[in-house]
Amino acid sequence: MKKAARIRLTVLAVLFFVFFPEAVLALSCGKFEYPRCDGPLLQYAGGFDPKAGFGGFGGGSCSAVRTPVVFIHGNGDWAINWDSPITDAVKGYDPPARSVYQEFRARGYNDCELFGVTYLSVEEQASPKTNYHRPEKYDILIRFIEAVRAYTGKPQVDIVAHSLGASMAIAALTHRDDRHPGTGGWAGVRRFVNIAGGIRGLPACLAAGFANPHVTTCGSENVFNPYVFGFYPDSRLPAGYNRWTGDEGPLSMRRAPEHHPNTWFYTLHAGYHDQIHCTTAQRHQRCDQGALFAPSANVKAQLNVGAGSQARKETFDFADWRPTARSGGDANGVGHFKARNNTGRILCEMLDTDCTGIACKGSYAGGPVRAGAE
Image 1 (cartoon, helix red, strand yellow):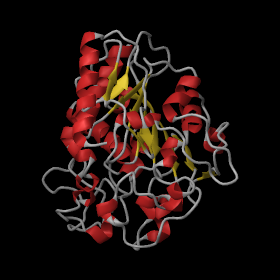
Image 2 (cartoon, one colour):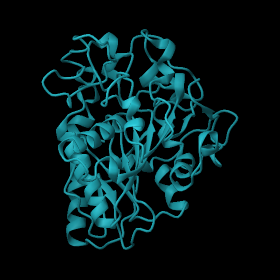
Image 3 (tube, one colour):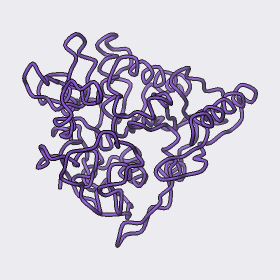
Image 4 (tube, helix red, strand yellow):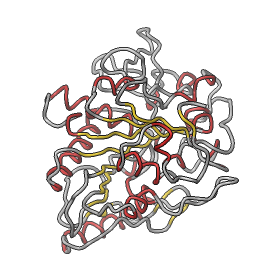
């Protein structure tokens, strides 16, 4: 959809919210063209007004009984795509019947228990190779989470985050605790589901370089502000130094679970079928582990749902890093984006039960499921 048309739809949604604040407005995808919905960016209801971000969904004529879920989208994406319908079947398997959002609704969650925020502007959505982790984005996420807790009256939320959203959420919660210890950062999160997050960095960023001004999403850790960083894999050298993607210290994203033992952690990923992690000529051998947390007692399950074609073993084209770029498993199975779109049943199992390991597959029958990496 063109930028002007999206802006008009958002303005109309805002006006609707202003004049009909109590209207029940469950999330609606609108017209879908893989892998994006084109409905209004802002779909709040029931007086929910987070005053954060560039749109989102949640709220209604209801009250929260369960722990509310906050959905955090990935790079080049926006919140309403959590209602993306299933488009294709994996060969030999039945396609899931419902989107992630609709699966949660079918499981008994109501609109006062399901929330999503768009933390990227329209311009940032159109330029994924320039988006990186920084405090301005953390503030959006924290304000939104705090607004959900205030609206629902619940002390904790569950977080389901995809791709850039997973690492952005980890950094935001850590940043919050660093500035205001004990005021609702990680203490306010009951369970955290990471879907294909680049928590060990992206091997393809080695080709882009740790300080490429044209691909700032690949930057290393800023020497002046450690909370500004990109996906460059840690080199343990001044050039390319990045504790967030590295294996040591309290900022290591892969070791977040051991630093936050009261939160349960889960991972869903697509292994070698993930085109964002594994379309790489460098470090291809272990790219299937890029989304995995280090083992810890509170890491309850890490499941590989990848299927179809494996990603190409070549240098990633960062100019084409968009959800519309079909390669790897997403072309004919499950890759980086369908690891989100197709897995509503597994996500519900992770948040609504005390499952561990492969048991978190639940009734999902949309493709193969394996524990760990390939």
